[in-house]
Length: 401
Ligand code: AMP
Ligand code: MG
Image 1 (cartoon, rainbow, N blue to C red):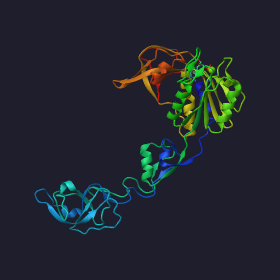
Image 2: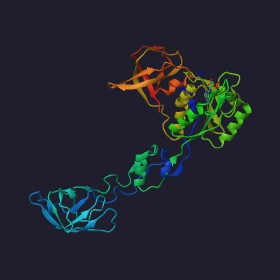
Image 3: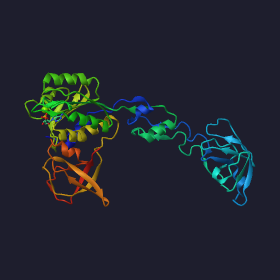
Image 4: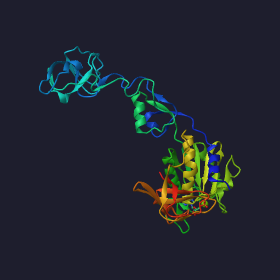
């Protein structure tokens, strides 16, 4: 027997960050940046107008009021994208659009709303201080500044920022390609009819989705029968394309536990009883350098094992900290019991009201009872030393993705 922490430490000690890859920006969405991206030039690159209005010398309009406007000749229009160099002499103004380069000599922009909008001459009815409605070069980002750090997950704002500093490609950690395979003679594809003794296969769908939630690319494979030769063939076929393989089923103490049978002693794969509920029988190791996670077959055991062991490993492969699912402290609404000596993950419903979290454990906690997982939003994590916790106790609760 080993503890959850020991098993996780074994896993994290054996997975490596994936080699970096150069991707076009939109292909990089959701990946983790492997380089620091910095601005080659200041942003904005030049002083420009923050408003549609008139570029002026502030001193020229210092006396302007509603009752006594200042009238200036308009020398022309400057629009966003104008590449010519323009200049303004005192006593004159130029109509200017948002984002257009400020003409040399101007030191303020009067918004069009403060004028009569004139073409040849304009009446300005309010004064503005020097610098008014000017966006200065570098006031967003100075030249050379790092705008997105290595190790950042690339979401919409980060992709926008990288484009804004002129980069079309980035070096990232690729999404781990994770092959997900279920094993079991009793399993049928959803959509197919069931014979007596058969059930619809669900783990591979659940875990392929969980891989995607964890930042990976999930490749669901057809279910493999409980035949040693077929299980071995599957591993052989999948190793060439996978960054990791996740299987379910066939790792406990039955007579058809073929995953355990064929992998024991292969590569560095080891099988362990882990002090947890659900999820006691676990296997992990490297096959030809590829991390292989053999999770138990009961659906809730498989899911909890994924969140506790596989998700942190997939994060590490992406160059992220191998954090567990985010937790909050919550108050139990009812008494709960927990098996001594085991880390207990209970399905629960977390809710927030009157400024604090409460959590109610689901009625059904059997490892085959997927129904209570599908209606849960959290896992209550009870330590090995917990036995009976009365309502009102504070517990740590993992939020499910
Ligand atoms: P095993 O670990 O293979 O002994 O399976 C334990 C239990 O989980 C059995 O009741 C299996 O029928 C069930 N089970 C195993 N794999 C799956 C799967 N992929 N989808 C749904 N149930 C499964
Ligand atoms: Mg089985």
